[in-house]
Amino acid sequence: MATIFSKIVAGEIPSYKVAENEKFYAFLDINPLTKGHTLVIPKREVDYIFDLDDAELAEMHVFAKHVALAIQKAFPCRKVGEAVIGLEVPHAHIHLIPMQNESDMLFSNPKLKLDAEEFAAIAEAIRTAWENKD
Image (cartoon, rainbow, N blue to C red):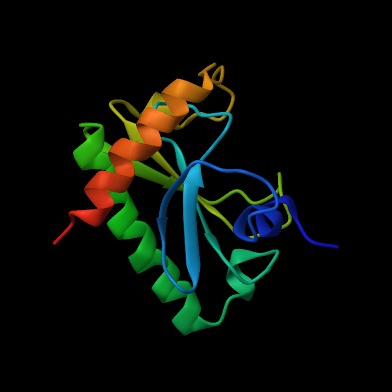
């Protein structure tokens, strides 16, 4: 059975896409800790990030790095934090979270409540930074 993330990649479930290439897909977390909180996933369905082969894991992190740089350009912050928890959805994913303080990375923090317009504007800002990364 396909995961919710596989259905997002297939276009069966809508998402706020910020970046994509042939192997990876990045989209906004719908329960964000901060504005710009993004998920990076392999398009191929893999439950555990460390089940990716070495080359694919490295490629995923390089892709995530470029997404993080776009996030930082769109949402100035001290750093973009990275977290891999992987228990919520059985599909490998990296959380990229713009942060001003380490406490911005606490998953126990209340999630932001954003409307569709805000999500669309955030995705557009990151996507524009992604497309103009060179």
